[in-house]
Image (cartoon, rainbow, N blue to C red):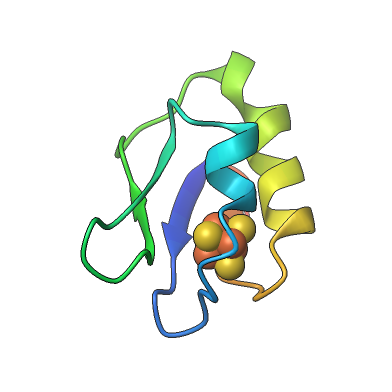
Length: 68
Ligand code: SF4
């Protein structure tokens, strides 16, 4: 699985950080999302999918293995 965040779409809601603080963080200066990790373990996949689904800005992109 690959995960990316689009800071131009992030509206700083903090939802992702609330749900997965080990994976997501917010910048101290502008509160925009940052990823804490660059690779992910299978046990994190469900929470990553949920974070992408719940993000109000559509800023989190999850690409499953085998997808483009
Ligand atoms: S849930 Fe989406 S909009 Fe909210 S901080 Fe995370 S990436 Fe940004």
